[in-house]
Image 1 (spheres, helix red, strand yellow):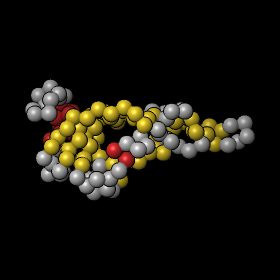
Image 2: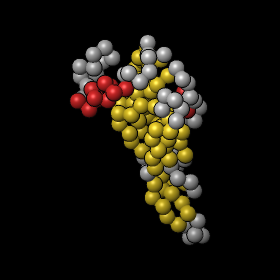
Image 3: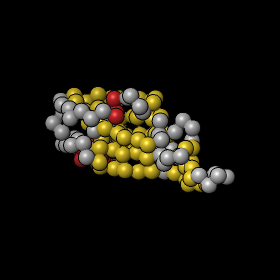
Length: 132
C-alpha cells in the first residue's frame, strides 16, 4: 500500500480509508511504524490536530499476568471513547486473590485520537498519522 493511491490495499482497507479520510480536514499523512512501550509514547496524549489510522495495532503485557485486567480504550477525534476492549483470563491464586492472564490484543483497521490502556505495556502500531 502507498499513501498516494492505496492501490495495493485490500478491499477491507479501502473501505476503511474511504470512511476515515473525511473525519478530519488533514493536510499531511505520514506513514508510521512504532514498536515499544505504550507509556510515554505519542499515542497516549490527546491532540486535536492528529488522528491515527491503524492498519494493525497490537498491545501486550510485559509480564503476561497481573492483579488488574488488561484493557484498551481508543478515543476518537473528539476525545470520546469509541472502542473499549479486554482480553483476559481470570483465575485465583492459592490465597484466593483474583489474577488475570493478560492476553494480547490485536486490532485491525481502526482509527483513534489517543489510546488508554490498563496493564498493557507494549505495543506495535503500523499505519498512518493524519495531521491537521
